[in-house]
Image (tube, rainbow, N blue to C red; front, side, top):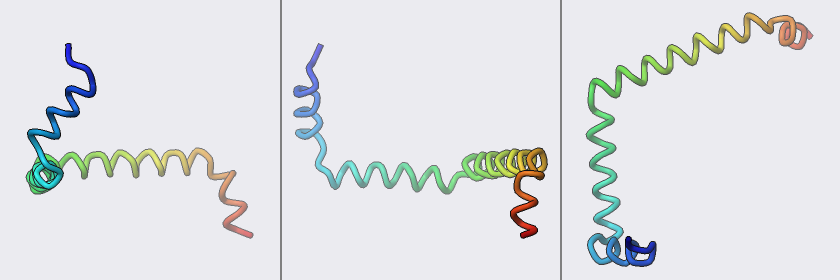
Length: 69
């Protein structure tokens, strides 16, 4: 088993920082443009908003008074 120093040295030998940044950026760009990613973001956003409104409705006595004042 290789130590962390050995792994770090191998990574540094194989990839420069600009190559790593380029690889990460290209992977992010490909994911951001995919329809599956868009669909998942919409699904998560809808779920978060649904949960937010449920919590606000359940605790409306807590925040209504401060809004009225």
